[in-house]
Image (tube, rainbow, N blue to C red; front, side):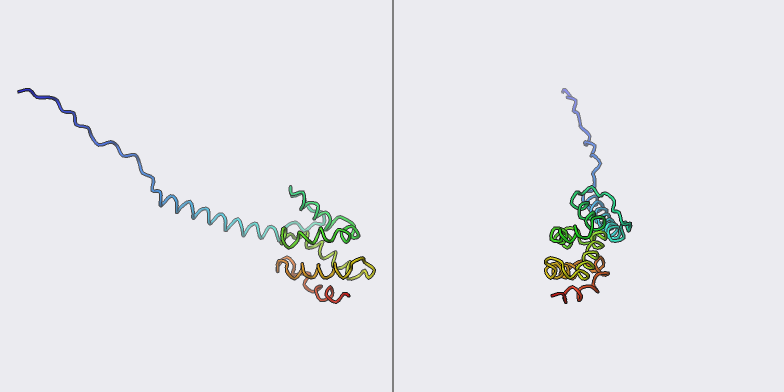
Length: 152
């Protein structure tokens, strides 16, 4: 009788398993917390941004030009380019404090200048922008709505 050697293999070492469900839940929770805190922080910084009269460069060419119009350009230039200026406030930059200061400058100018070309159109559009604007950012201009609506 002849005995043949038998080689018995041990179990393969099991690679350490990553608990995928737990890892996913941790990653999703961290992402959600980051988005929540970042969104709140960004919202606060955007509204309480710089209050100086000369805006800082933002890297966004359009926003830089709108901010220049809002606070640095002569009021006549802002009034001449009102359609360009007002079209971006409610949709693209609804909480930019510098742009709302420019809207306030424009409102004062429209109310004070009776011989302005398209005065009624500018006044109505500006009143609509203020009404539909962000409640916090446009709060200081809400008192001007009735004066703008009264322009005929």
